[in-house]
Length: 336
Image 1 (spheres, one colour):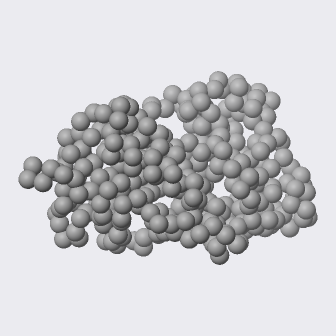
Image 2 (cartoon, one colour):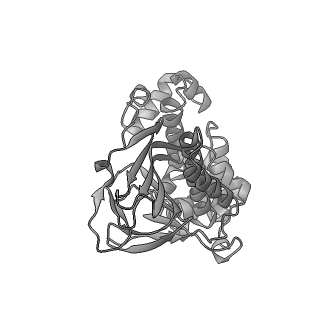
């Protein structure tokens, strides 16, 4: 398996931004429904020699912040990346990986360590040997649920691992967040664990936004459409008004091109027709509103422009394979 890696160290305005058709306001509009919630967190103290294993968690994302020290991260295909204090690692697909002080050391699963509860879903792992109690490295680790809402199709295009170098200048807004995280990790003031958890969610969301802003690595499909001014305006219109009963002609008019050219270009770029995309977008949003926002089914149907709850339920089952009630009643995943 070939690892897809992105290192976010370039400065804003570089070449990676050039082909991207969307403004910052448009990116914000598209990502406004993103939900990123931590399921489990650990503050991890490590001695001079360590090897930690993190098993694959499909459907989840891993977040690591190295507050103190240095380390290596080894991904599932054996690739090694160096980390220094202040580095952030985001693994969108929950792929298996290891954190090590040296590549030849044996590894031990993170779940094998006893964790002392700190606050809510945050636990403290002290893996320092008694002979060397002062930590050589301190990590804050999170396992998260990542939901991009109406832009969920982008999540499948994300790289296997995103590395944010501590010295990178792409995210001037991220650096103060990481500085605050380091302070909370090291000072351990009252309530620090809960604050760290919230800061980690903000940092991870900023990493995702940065990936979108830098052009989604020039990937195909939906990301390619977002870089294409002939299609981006139509996609924005659909996301801004998902309950409107759009026609292909109306969407083409948003892009100032003919109906036939628009329909053909949309199909060839995204792999589905404009109206199919509109329907799938509605059902993605509906699933989020039902499961996470706990809106009544009738309210969701009205928000999405369906004449009746029955019509909405038929469309929902046709696209998702289950009735709306099943989405509402789906159990909440709480274990990492």
